[in-house]
Image (cartoon, rainbow, N blue to C red; front, side, top):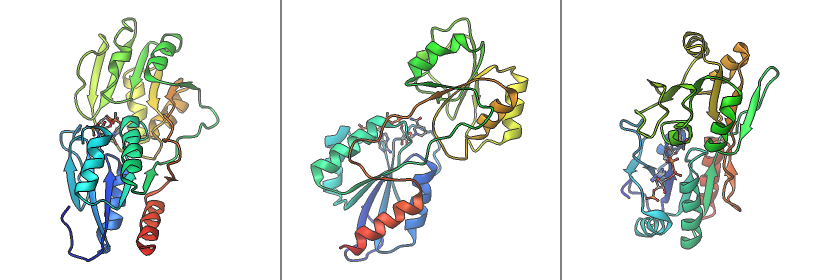
Length: 257
Ligand code: NAP
């Protein structure tokens, strides 16, 4: 894990793939007491890279992650993956326990319904798919390119699928793909709903500002939204809500030696 040559620098591994992970790496980049490596899964063809060291690709499960952490003498682990990257979060908890390395989860808060919202909560993509035929016929599906199999049998519905990279089968039969990456603005989201005559939106409860305008656009249009609930953070793992909170956690660790 190369980096600035500071004796006793705290080696921090950030599990990334989110805006917050990048902001955290940016905040820690100028601190010579800390050496940050960000890990990306490698799912996105051209990811926005954070400053500092970056490694790409899976570790091979929790044991692989623990082995990597031992080999690179990681002092602190921050799980800043997307709130729906549940497998990686479980692996992080297991690897931290195996290696006795302190672990923090960085999770932006979820979205909160406002007056006028017509939200229907689902526990999973499969549950969202079950709800859809009761809510609309022209679906704006913004849950990402993975997991489309859950919607593949809904032949009576039409889907506008928005994702960063092209989805792979199995996908819904009646589907148009919109390749795009946030942030998105309200005007653009309004226009998508109008032009495609969308009558129901599906989203994960990702939280954050970058993709929130679709919720306001749906509220304005009076259309229902299926909100897929987040998986829980693994038990016992402390949570920071912002990159700044995570920076304070790192500095506290450094100060405590
Ligand atoms: P996941 O289902 O929780 O993880 C599947 C496997 O991908 C993990 O077991 C791990 O492989 C590898 N992996 C995931 N995150 C990794 C990371 N940061 N560094 C190295 N390996 C990683 O994850 P996912 O939902 O597919 O998400 C993959 C990445 O996309 C994450 O970095 C996440 O932050 C980002 N992302 C996800 C979503 C979403 O909706 N799920 C949305 C936006 C961004 P090994 O077991 O081999 O280590």
